[in-house]
Length: 296
Image (cartoon, rainbow, N blue to C red; front, side):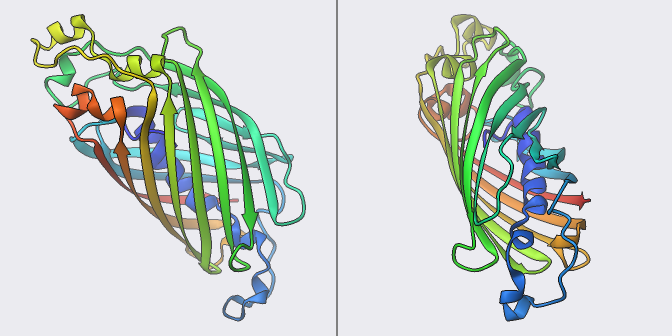
């Protein structure tokens, strides 16, 4: 998953919440095999068409690389209709066009579109706020993944996913490629936890757009920020931890749930070396989120 700042921060808050509540690991597992989870089988809300809507808030950096934090709201939705999965990502949408088949292995593939508003408005840092605003961008690409259920227990899953997107709005914001490995396990019929780790690579155009400082930008800050040329490369690595529970004690029948998430992101290469981060921010990025979701 991508960065925590601006609209990306909104995306990360909402999806961390929605993904935690939405994860049907217990629903897809043979729970009665475990004595401590044994109970009468219920209609499984995740068997056919379903949707999860989540709202929440996070304590997040003001923009990627910022050392100013604040509370930001988030909303998200994910689900499946007619075998086609969908998930909102900030101001954007991902689709999974591959129907799930019986068995423990699931494959996903589909288009990914995002509307990115990074540093297109005012920021808290007085010097950063003097820089010219970035134009809003539209990114289009695709994502793919594979997940395996019942890895260590009948109620867990591990997933590997990757996505790539290009700026199609004509702003020259380049391309990014992200990859993530995640593990989720049910702790009870109505409680679950997970861990994930991921990284993102960006090309030269992306790095120039978001991390370079032009002579015009340097002058706009009264030369408090020097000019800087950015390069392609890995821009970060990130780890996250999730915890969620269902209020009626069973994820499988839908209803109301609560989720908590913590993340740490370490910026790398040009994302860390740019004066935007090195002089005015911090390469260490933290986030904490809480949210409420309803599955039906």
